[in-house]
Length: 402
Image (tube, rainbow, N blue to C red; front, side):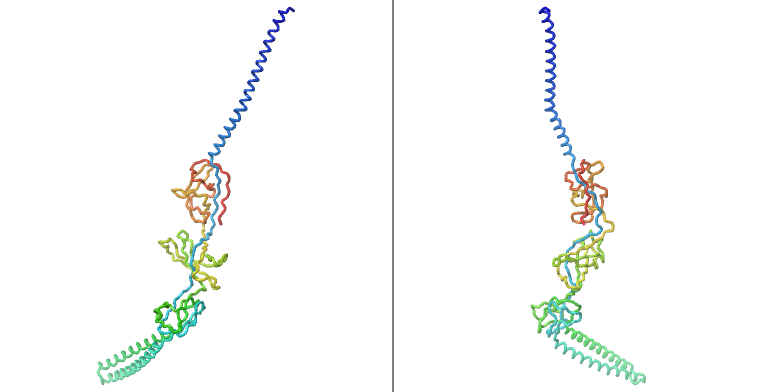
């Protein structure tokens, strides 16, 4: 073959080969560019998607909810109280004189009618003797006047005396009788005063004060002769049974009645409870303190409790139909009232006003506005709004504080 023909056949082959190479290079460059784009753009897209999801999750509030439980039927209402003796009396002298003896000192246990002291009253004794003599004279005069009046009535029947004179004798006998009765009443009065020479205990109790000394002058019902001594000679308190007065708040007053179970605790006996009961109440709310005065009686035959001591009174208040309860952390205190945040079936917040009943400290009874099936948000933030979408993390059951 001539050389010209060979050159002419080789040129198309060379062109075809360079075209193929260019195509291969273009494809390779395209693939390389796609790879570069994949390496740079895809992570950005993924990061942007993740960021979008994260922002969406942050905008959706995560909350924990709780289910209301039934409040306890019995509530232990703790109130302060002051222990008082069952009976407390100041003993004064009823007659004037000098203290001859005293027989009971501070802390002595005495019985009703037991002699505490004797008062020497010589002047009163002399007055009694004079009164008895006056009564004897009045009795003699009355007997004479009575017999005279009877004689004159007999003579009047025979017209021996006038009717006026007979009536005068009868009136004189009546006057003598009145004088006799007055004298006898005076004797009785002085005898009663003489009986007060012995100061006696009015009831079983303990002597808490003695303000007399042998030889001291005392006056009837007044201040003794010594200016430094108080008016009372003895002070006695009955301590085998005690009273405690407590003031029950108005909200709980309707649940306190005679016979309500009560227990009493004091600081000097930690862990010990003294059983008691409600004896009576005033049935009137104090308009100043808005409380009900209640008397609690305590048996103290062992003498453990002392009058005047501070005590804590535990009243067991019972409710026939207890409502539902929630922890205090679930409440929102808004200007328009107490509110709770409830999650509905669409996981949206529903703000609801409630009425608070009994207060148990960390838990409160919700009287109205709460159902047993509600999902109540625990620890809701102040910024939570009605209709806000939330995501429930958990639904624990609200345990009772009791």
